[in-house]
Amino acid sequence: DAGVIQSPRHEVTEMGQEVTLRCKPISGHDYLFWYRQTMMRGLELLIYFNNNVPIDDSGMPEDRFSAKMPNASFSTLKIQPSEPRDSAVYFCASSFGGGRETQYFGPGTRLLVL
Amino acid sequence: GESVGLHLPTLSVQEGDNSIINCAYSNSASDYFIWYKQESGKGPQFIIDIRSNMDKRQGQRVTVLLNKTVKHLSLQIAATQPGDSAVYFCAENRATGRRALTFGSGTRLQVQP
Image 1: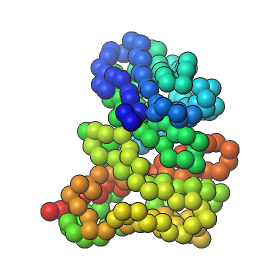
Image 2: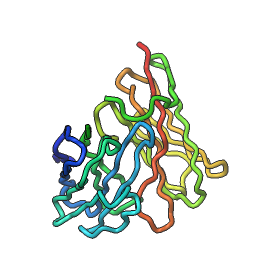
Image 3: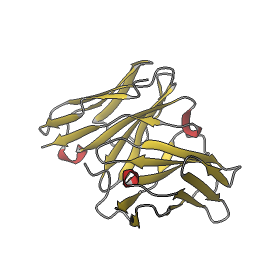
């Protein structure tokens, strides 16, 4: 099993640019989660999907952030326009059965906005 | 490759000793808890979980204890090895219908050879 796959692993961009992060969950998992990890705020849940449908996006910081899951094997997190305070490591995780089941994390995308 | 926080609590132990990492949770309605390990530059990795109908659960070299009375969770690592050096997070599922985990701030474990 390849595990959760994220791309790119590293992204450096300039303020104002659009950034798209990608995630492929583990096959068969029905929940997908996007997290952000920073030194100041730790690991925060941004949004999660169940069967490709967004269930809770209350953690999305603002309208500049959007996430989609067009099918069971692919999700994107987009930031437009990006700002320096968006610099963080973004993790995607997937699980079978939601919050009371083990979530498996990808390796993360390290984003730096200059 | 730091994971979180310049000011993470740090536990430093000698190789071969047992380690105990503690976590307090706030929501008495939480019914599921997980310990994750995060090595530098990697995503959190599942270690062990426990449900609220249990007080103790054992894995390979790890034991999780749950004290619901004081809302406290601990992770015990037996015969700590250099490869155990990482940041450890506890996470809880707050049984409020939101099927997602809430993570603690983490503890850094440093194993001295």
